[in-house]
Picture 1 (cartoon, rainbow, N blue to C red):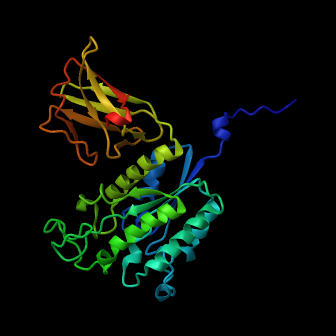
Picture 2 (cartoon, rainbow, N blue to C red):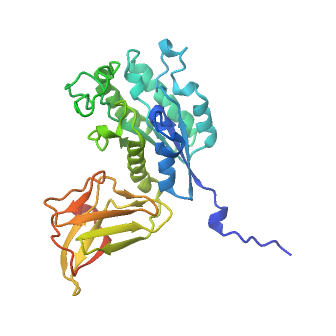
Picture 3 (tube, helix red, strand yellow):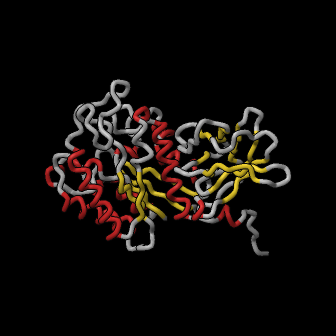
Length: 331
C-alpha cells in the first residue's frame, strides 16, 4: 500500500528565503533586546510563516574593499556573514550597505567595484534573483549643530548628537549617485530608507543607529517594498466603526497587512458614498494588531508613523466603512 502524507502541500513547500545583508543597522547595534527587535526580526514577523528571514548584518562593514581598512576587516565580502548569505541561497536579498564607505577612506572606484562583486556573489549566477539596495541611505543626525546635511544635527536642544560625522556628509551625495548607477548596471531594485526616517530623531540614540521603534519602521518600509516583488498574499482585515468617530482596521491574518493602494470608503445604508481615506507611505499593520483612523480631524494625516486622521470624513455615525483597492491612476 502506498504511503499517504497527512501534510498539506503548503506544509511541504519550501519557505521563500529573504536575506538581510548589511552593516550595524541590519545587525541591530545598540538596540535593547537586539535579537527580538532588529529590523530583520520585525520583517520576519511581517512576512509570516511562509517566509524565512535571516539577519546577515555585521557592524562597521563597507561595500568597497579599501586597502587602508583591510586589517580592520571592513569589507563585507571578507565576513563570515557574507559567506553565510551566499550559502543561504536567498530568493531575495535586501542590503543597507554604504554609509560606512563615506568616511576618510572613501574611494568611489573601489566602492562601485566592491558592491557589484557582492551583488554577483549573492546571486551566484542566478541573475533573476531580486536584490534590493538602499539607494537613499538611512538618516545621519550627527554633525555640526544647525548645519543641514542628511539631515544633520538639526533637532537640538531636544535631540542632540555628536558634532562629528566622520566626514560622511561630504561624500554621501556622490555615494548615493553611485548607488543609482550600481542599481542600473546590475538591474537591482532600490529602496528609500531616508525620507520616512529623517523626521524622527527620537528613534535614534546616537544619531545613526535606530532603536527598536526605528527598526520596526524600517521593517515596514522593507515589507512594503517586498510585497509586490514577491507577490506576498495579503491577510483578511476587519473594519469597525466606533461611537468616538474612529475607524479601526484589524489584521486578522498571520502576516503583515499592507494598506498602500487601498482606501477606507464610507457609505450610507442606501449605498451613497460619503467620503474616503486613502492609505500610502508604507502603512502596514502587524499580525494581530490594529490601526485607527480619527475622523473629523482638522486636516488629513496619512503618515503612519503618527496618528492617522481624516478631515474629509466629518462624522462616521450611521455610515458603513469598508476597505477597497484604489486604481493606481486615482491614488
